[in-house]
Image (cartoon, rainbow, N blue to C red):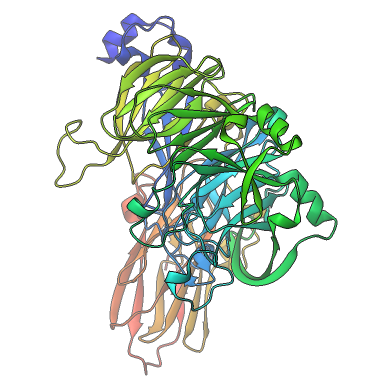
Length: 640
């Protein structure tokens, strides 16, 4: 097959430049051996807790990045250095439901520095460094629950924003659930991002009425400085929500002028309240994470900041909330409405300035639907969810119930094309689709159900992505490929932005880990009561030391292991028999620590788990474990 394709296309340029020559779907997604994909695509892993990295157009999976879940493949969340990343105010939480990734932006364009993701279950926001593809920071979001309308960045990554799905008592207290209405609050959290380092800081929370805040997107261009959130359950029901939260003909899009609130708090506004939340930061010089519990958060009552928050009526139980690349239109997809609703930012401002309000909700002005409406798309589809943009004036909306992707013109609201999905599509992603400058070549539909598309694998199949060519007037289905976990949104970026900046190794001279053994003379074994610390190094194809004696049953053995390789893509693994946690996979120049508590007398091997050379199999050693009352002296060796 490869010969046939190479015969059709003699170009040696990246696949993305072959489009004019490619004539079949297979040719358009085929990336010849040795050539690279045109785009990186980052898929949320949903209940896997992790982020997965794919190439487009090939659909090849490159990497799984552990974020909120322990990951035995490399020991994330098991090693002493990474355990603090999963600390919360509830204690160690080794799992979450990872939803929406968003790439950092400068002037509304993707800059490829970081990608932010949210933990939906125990509310958290994580920042992943796109040089190392490792999780660098996780901040917990207090006063929030079901962190769903997250995580999306403002035009210059001033903030990453997190809105609560479930409103809760603030502060939490023992209260009857039947007292929900009027007593629960919805927190919209604005986490500022340091421009140089990316370091996050929870700057303020807006305490909104007790609705469910579903999804959100930032304004851009003329609407920069605003943020938009869909709501449902404006009925404030607390039981049988599929019925009781569907009573109102319209719910709202909440429009938040964050610039105005920022000015308010910079001038001393807001109320500090006690709140415990974890802030976990990984340091690449010490190769270790540190968790800090914070005790206070700044809250804002929106009624105290006139002109900052308004409610836009939107039919009906709107889910997706998307802003077009120009910032002129806000699209609210009422999942129980057959039509798509497009609000006009200009009309919204005019209505606010004319004070044309239609009542209020808990003191927040409600604008009149007709005064802010730009138009509707009479699509005839069922269950509209999410919309992305191609940068050419077109929008692409998913319809969950009718399982289709619909292309329509943003200005005329005319439906241009529709393509079936297999099946039950949720999100759609166009690389850069959540920015002012999308790369409108491909659209990726993320489907919830996959039956009939792949060979059966028992009762469950992986979820599925479908790649469409959107470069022409009509969409063309190019490829199906499985995804890991349940993908909730994805973010794509041209490879030429990220690949040149990818970090190859960690330099040994920069390694400031407290327990690193940077040279052969630094390897040793030390006892401190029942604690034994092994300062070990590894290089093709041996450990130093590789024979250790004098360990006793009841000891707690810390293996601090430093990889001395300074070559790209040469990690080494470490696995100890009987260790009840995981292995370690240690990158070149990195130090990691595994704890082992031997419970049986004997001579027990350890070995490298990642094939590293022709003598990989010989990369092993032994630990002798003696009875708890043994007087055998602690000793270690290599080459004796």
